[in-house]
Image (cartoon, rainbow, N blue to C red; front, side):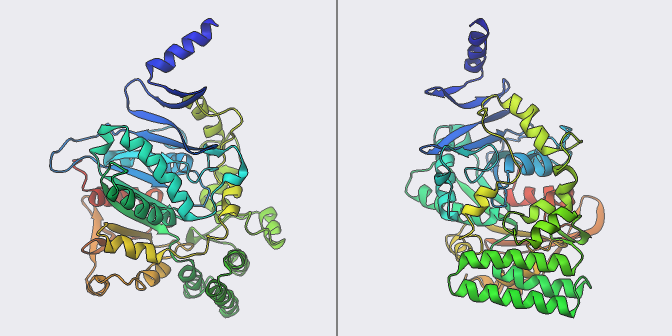
Length: 456
């Protein structure tokens, strides 16, 4: 009993809030970190983790920004991967990250949708089936966080997404804009940022074959097979057969892997490192259960080796769970939730170009960035869907010249930039799917420019 009283006293000291017996939020003594759960629907609980930047600069003309990071998958944990592998204050070995995005903004990580990472549902039937349902849950979370915290309301919120997270970002951007207009949400939306984002699956699957053929990674036969499956996907999407299109997408990945000797879909200059067991499962057509994230070389080196340096599974289920204190005992953290992916398979191949158009028409700042050597969301495919926009400013955007970008005093070209009104595009050289990891310096400079951070 004495230990329990001490524990409860500690929670009160740290500013814990209770709903029944559930701890909903906790913060560190210095207020630099806050985290907790929001019940976005009955029996559906979303986990969030906010870092307040030690580099904050208060400027009346340029308020300090907040970045909401949305991971892809769908079903990949931003609290785990985006935080410890890409942009958070510490890496997967709990060492300080030199190029953490905290240098330019506060960071809000969310395990989205529910069922991902630390987020959970008490009934599997409550998992979301569409991107819009995910956006509704996220809007509920953001409303509860921002409406109750005046300090958060002072900072513009930038929704920054990677991979499938881009589809969540554009649907969330529209949902948030609507909530703001109806005065249900107290925040200023700074913009939506789409990093290597799965906005138009059709354009990406048609880009894979020709791109890999030009790189000598596919031959004529491989190209022909790839293009034929891509054409099938196009017809399935046209007919509204979205689950079938998802199955064909998985088949196409398998065909490309076999004909390219396992090219890495996240960096086409590398092999994925697929082991024979993974390939065997793929041959059994269990494609959906094997996310590309599973057999990318970026991840497999630690994913299947618990206890080794940088292993996220051991880290998040060990020292991080102990630190957070409020993770239910029954919850086991996984980098990728197959249940979340499966429940979204009917939406997985649907495009979100129209949503980007709506954001642009509403005057929302939209930034797109793409890694040069990414395959899964190849630049070739991104440029293709951009040209399908109906936004009135598109001809002017396409007619603009690109500007080279650099890092500090290094005059080696790191990428290119083009902008017209509220549409911006960054081409990042030497980066694959995970731009902040592959090119941390230019990624940090880029996010500083996007957010107009007052940081020096």
